[in-house]
Amino acid sequence: MDKKIIAQILHEIGVLLELKGENQFKVRAYQNGARAIEMLNEDIKQLVKTGKIEEVKGIGKTLVENITELVTTGDLKYYHELKSSVPEGLLEMLKIPGLGPKKVFKLYETLSISTIAELEYACHENRLLDLKGFGPKSQENILKGIEHIKKFQGQFIYRDVYSQAEKILAKLKECQEINEASIAGSLRRFKEVIKDIDLLASSEKPGQVMEYFIHLPQVAEVISKGETKTSVILDTGINVDLRVVAPDEFYSALHHFTGSKEHNTTMRYQAKNLGIKINEYGLFKGEKRIIVNSEEEFFQVLGLQYIPPELRENMGEIEIAEKGQLPNLVNLEDIQGIFHIHTNFSDGINNLEELVLEAKQAGFKYLGISDHSQTAVYAGGLKIEAIKRQREEIQNINSQHQDFYVFHGIEADIHADGSLDYRDEILALFDFVIASVHSGFNISGERATQRLITAMENPYVTMLGHPTGRILLGRKGYEPDMEKVIKAAKENNIIIELNASPYRLDIDWRYLKYAKEMGVKISINPDAHRKEELYDTIFGIKMARKGWLAKDDVFNTMTVQEVRDYFNKRKKGYESSV
Image 1 (cartoon, rainbow, N blue to C red):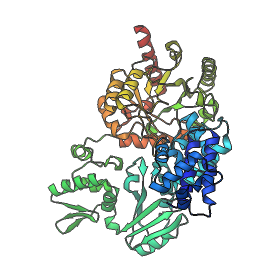
Image 2: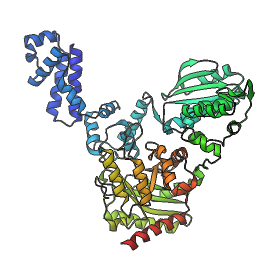
Image 3: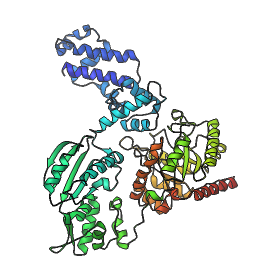
Image 4: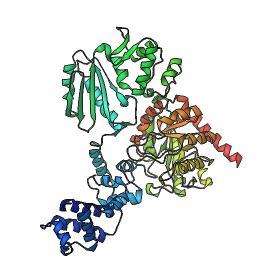
């Protein structure tokens, strides 16, 4: 092992020690040792063999032992033990400009942040604004650094990709040689994590279309260029594949390239039973092409009700479509109001009046304010006096806005044993209570399940917030048995949140269909920390549709009066049972 690698390992040990919060003398010893090794003119193997390594300035007894082990064995046990004791994500966070080991350790120690995705989410929740050594400018610079890193990550959250895909699609539609164009692939199916963008266009002049495409201002690099398919990399680091087909092939190709593979395979069997061949080029009866002028016609030829793109995952949609019994999926226009909104009483940016005005502008009829509870000190959780002040402010707002209503709620922390962090007489003050886990993620699935069930058994709990605690591309969550959780929600008349933050989208869409079957209401909540995030509701809508939800399955499609009656009925129910 040469001196360059040894110096690199010693330097990394110093970084790891700093990430663990070790004393600075120990950290500096490894940093100085690394520099001393780098500056050596002598052969390090010879120095170790003769014992003269001990005479090198800046190399103490412990480092002599480490260097000797590295030279003689080619490895260092202490280095591997130390590396395994530090969350891998902390080292990744060091790639963010301006974040050194001390700051990363502070984030880990105070906010339990151990991945870049968790850090990004914390910035969007304004967790760094009042953290010593950070502040608004630091938070802004960290977000910029994360954006740079994400260019080379290879996976992206839906929100980041979709906005770029829409811009490219709009540009394509300006091309005179293009007849029709659409987003395809997993993006069209509204998968929450996306690897690349698939676009489809129809044209009689594909060569000219491809030439137009590669010269769009967003294109940073052309990977390959052909008559039917061209692949590029955008300046944001996202790969885009554009396929161009003949005009009479467009709708068959759109179905094929939307996928999923499993859905397409089952569709081919469906077609085969009707004596029809189906592929990316069209529908064929023998050698004769069956012309279709829309996707609706495509499904109609196969004896099927139109299957929306988001349902095409081979989860029973084809069998249900054959019976004509697919649900009329929920739309944004169905949403009357939204819950899980944070104000500047805790870690939100905007005051209540600003949020109300923005919500009215967005077309909503009510808001459910739910700031953090007292355990969430890092997020300015509300003490009793703050709760009373906020309640008065909400009452004043409601008296001033006759066409809008604000419900007063709280996002109460669920403790490890499933209890909440306010006494029942405090919880009784609120119109609704969202119970959420914000700490203690490293527990077994069984314990996580029981923790959530115990919380839902509290008679003052109205909703279960972000049930698995996941952060997309950052934190897997605590993996409860969601079927048991959903059953418990049904038994206790609890609404389950579909957290619409594009960083969470939790509950996972794969469990929504089961919740629907169980009759559990879902509330699509933006978890907004600034007024702009009220519009994140649309991402929850997309996931709700993917989970087969219709208007009647969603709690916040109810009117103001229906919601008020629902909350009052619950309160009377548990007050009379006490």
